[in-house]
Image 1: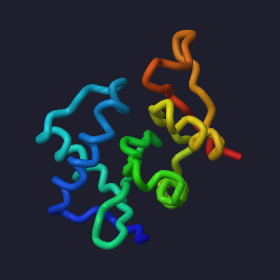
Image 2 (image 1 turned 180 degrees about the vertical axis):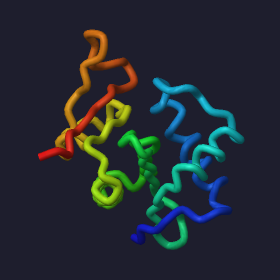
Image 3 (image 1 turned 60 degrees about the vertical axis):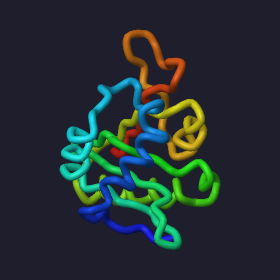
Image 4 (image 1 turned 90 degrees about the vertical axis):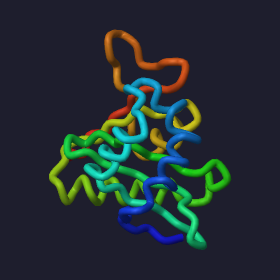
Length: 141
């Protein structure tokens, strides 16, 4: 496995991963059409994990600490890809002086995020939706 910055020209590969996983996971945010998504992707400059020239996951961190995208191909779950991506998120956050992280996390990924110290974010008296929940983590010690 190799972690590296996203490279222009990989949009279709990342779009396919996003389409396969993202729209059902990110239903709490506005669905983006392809052009909007590419514009957002280029602005966020994600990091990708590849194995044998295949992208198996990617992550993006916004300047305010929001994890915009955090996706790992289903066939690569529980094989260290998420851990590699989460280490990168924490490294980027430290470099940017981000004081906390926040993400909308699908039901399946809640235990993984919780293992990294993320806790449910209470908003308007609700912590959970059918498809997932917002979770946060303070980085201030």
